[in-house]
Image 1 (tube, rainbow, N blue to C red):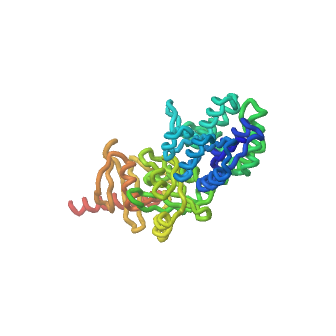
Image 2 (cartoon, rainbow, N blue to C red; image 1 turned 90 degrees about the horizontal axis):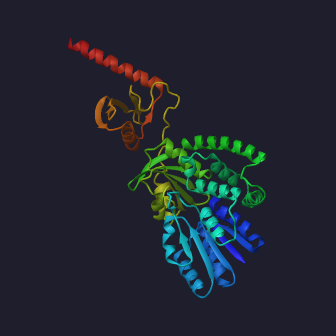
Length: 399
């Protein structure tokens, strides 16, 4: 009997679907949370099943089970662990461990793509157009390369995964991959996916108004409480507020934190690792332990949500040659305007504060340190007219 213990997200379930296709009824698939895997492994090892083949994908075990699995293999047991998280690279030291974060051509690896290659190499599966596309869609979603390559179909596959139960999703995908030469959604799925996109957009708009900002260590973090759509939410909030180093998404019901970043110079797996978690450089998570509760909930609790930049302006626009006006909660006015393509001046209450090589640097300064927001057109026009009148009056007095 083959026994697959894998993650309960799309990438993990993708491995389960491949196992069903490869082994049919001769496989027992268990979908686990990060914490749940070790419990399953302990139960498996207690039964000392030397005749079974143990496959672990998209997850890694804690140090005690790591040693026990190695002992199990040394006395004749069969174990294969396939993972793609940087925090699991040390498993490559074992004969039964194989961890690949990135392929030689620069593509990021996913558990589903690694397991697919393994099953093909071992002769359990053969390449097909539908399987190749399904696996690539899962990989694109899990590595977030779908956005860079604009492959919306990968996002819709993950949306569908969350809209129905794991059992139904697995059954639909197994049947489709067995029967179809190409991979596509049926008419019903397309309809509910269109509805889901609208729902996600509304959810993100609501959560955007609940985002708070604070410094945790050396990082400027955005914090929001949400139970759903963590990947979409983290990505959109990160793009809306690029001055934030990362977004922390708290799920109090599940006692978990998800970390997301859009920045190449921020590794959120290191942040999650401080609290016993891990994951990818741009998408990681951890359990909400006592220290994490203090830093991400208790201390930021009194902070007011960030004010949203005005978004229907025609005149007060970001990086405008006419300047851009921001205010903070203390009614300080910040005016950013260009002297040249490579020099932008920041004024605070009409006094020059400093200059920057780009608009983005100047905006980052006032948003990180003053929580300022872009004001509406009418306030911008009033500010400019007041400045013009002030200059004229000064000149008139001088004459």
